[in-house]
Length: 330
Image (cartoon, rainbow, N blue to C red; front, top):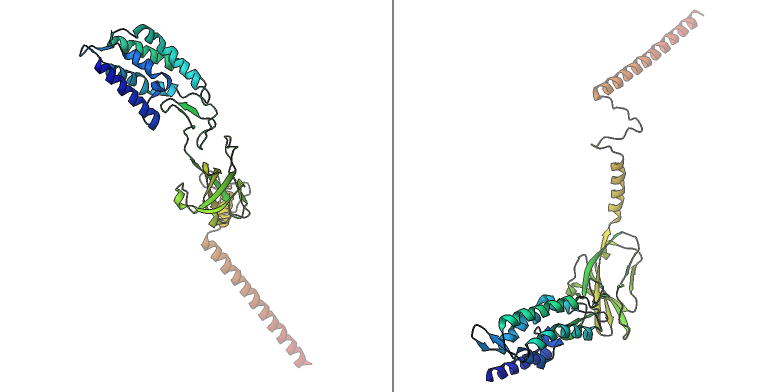
C-alpha cells in the first residue's frame, strides 16, 4: 500500500511538471483525469515480481498513449475540437476502467485492454476535423492552428517563419514589381507593416546579410527600370504589431541587355540551321569558287585590259603619223 501511494504521488508530480513546463509527452494526462488514472492502475500486478505496481502501470500508459506517435498525431484536431477529443478518449478508456478498476489483474491483461483502448482512440480521433485551413509552406498561422495533446494547448500550424526563395528572372531595363502577399488570413487585431530588405548579388535567406530599405503599409516593391546592380535577394517581412508573421524571399536574376541581344541573334542563327549544322536551302546559296580560279580570272582580265590599252595607243600613233605625212605632201 505504501508503494501504491508513493507511485500515485509521483504520477501526480510528473503530471504537474507536464502542465507547468510543457516539455514532456502527456497526451493521456491532457484528456484523462489524474484520479481516473490512479483508479485504473490500482490493480495492476507485475507478473515478473508478483506485486502490485502502479509504476509499471504508468509506464505502460506512457508507452501506449503518451509516447505513441500515432496517438499524438490523432490528437492534432482542429481549433475548437478539444472537448470532442476528450470525449473520444473517455469513450476508449471507460470500458477498461469499468472492467479493471478496483480489481487486481496481471500486466498481460492490462497490456491487452489498454492496447485496444489506444487503437480505438486512434481510429475515432482521426475522424475528428483537422486544422484544414493551415496553408503551407510557411508563416506563423495561429488562427487556424491545432490542438496539441502533448502540451495540452492549441498550437500554431507548425510552419517555419521563413518561406522558400522565389526566383524572378527579368531583363535589364525592364520594370519589376514584387507583391508580398500570403494565402492565409493575416491578424486583424493589430496594425500590419511590411518591411523590405535587400542582399545584393546573392541568393540567400541569412537574415544578417540583408540591409533594410523601406518599412510601411505598402505590400508592393517596384523598380521602374531594372539594372544589374538590382540583382540579389529581396526579403519581405510582415509584422502584426511587434509580432513577425512571415518572411518571404524573392531572388531577382537580371539578364544584362548585351546578353539579351546576343541571345536573340544566337536564337535566330540556330533557327536558320538544319539538324547537323547545315544551312536551310530555302534560298540557294552559290558555292564559292576555288582561290586559284579566282586568281586566273583576275590575271586574264588584267592582261586583256593591257592589250586593249596597247592597241589603242598604237592605233592613235598610226593615225598621227598618217596625218603628218599628208601635211608634208601638201
